[in-house]
Image (cartoon, rainbow, N blue to C red; front, side, top):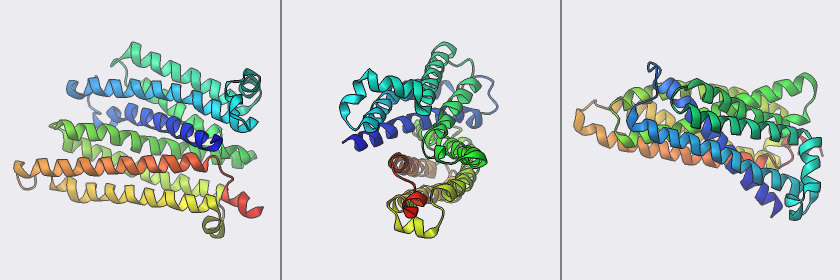
Length: 301
């Protein structure tokens, strides 16, 4: 019960923060030549998507804190007990990071509400900081010295690349569903961002794997490693769909005249939704991995 609650609360929070960053980044590369916001037909919905993600990111941090406290104390009552919560917030690195991130989430919400469409860069920068700060808690704290800096940096880059992809997919699905005239151009720009994101995910994933798994034996013989393999399979599925989109469906847009364009857009949207679902599966697995002992440690014990 306690561990399941921690996994679910982590999943909700990670998903919200990943989506928040991806949504805030999307207009910067999808509409790079616009001084103002993205087109009016999608701008309002994008605003509400962004604001909702920021609010959920803040609210979902509360059950994450509660279940963390409950797991530390070994009983659910600790989730609402200030005698347990107070020391966690004031005397642990998790508590310090949690307070700083809650303040940052409030700042992002205020900036979105007050600034509306006036500034596209500030929300993306703050959302990037909120997402990258997740690397300051969890397994990265088990390494020391220079290794700790390298591990945390790789984890932060991994999170940012994942957020750009998963959050961007949500907005891309909306663009495809709205029948925007510039959908093909947006798709090509998203693909360009995707190349960078995938390269970062693979490189940073290898670094994280070195610290958390270490050997092939640990990968295949421990519960952590086996769950990591499931994550890699879901990632491979996302990558396969992305490759099909870029090299099969996008070139087919308009190639046979306007009559063939809508069916291709419909299939693209289905692929994008499937990518998003697989991305959520990856986030769920990551949420579970964060509560487990790393494979390298499991094998050593």
